[in-house]
Image 1 (cartoon, rainbow, N blue to C red):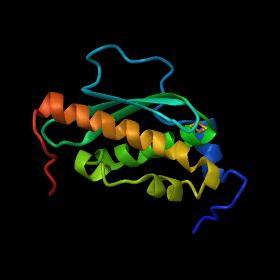
Image 2: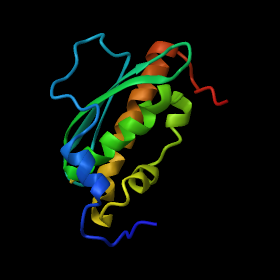
Image 3: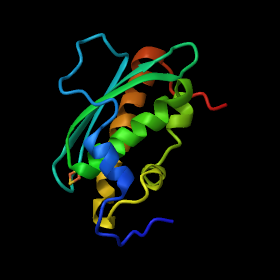
Image 4: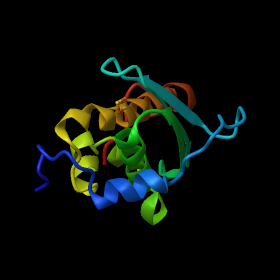
Length: 146
Ligand code: FES
């Protein structure tokens, strides 16, 4: 169990901060992805944007791109989350929605407690993208849970 009182970044946080996975420096072109979401942090004023390619048949997340005006923890958390969601052919969107910021932080080997809110940013942006996809592409009121 990571030490929540730590004041240092784990090797995993540093690895994902210095080499972020699935990061883009510009917004993708319209129509390139079939879901998009955004979230801002009241705690620090930072912003997170995410774009997804969700396979309509399998409901798996095939691609996950993101960019942020956020700190090292936000970058590392989002990079890790993007890996968790897309590894092994992509998670079903309903399963990806079960991942919590705590799960991301555990995979990173912990973050300083004061930086926990930074990992919430991608959670909110991802939920926003999934919700937009559900409404606009599927046109349903609920996610199908297997
Ligand atoms: S301080 Fe703003 S996302 Fe971390």
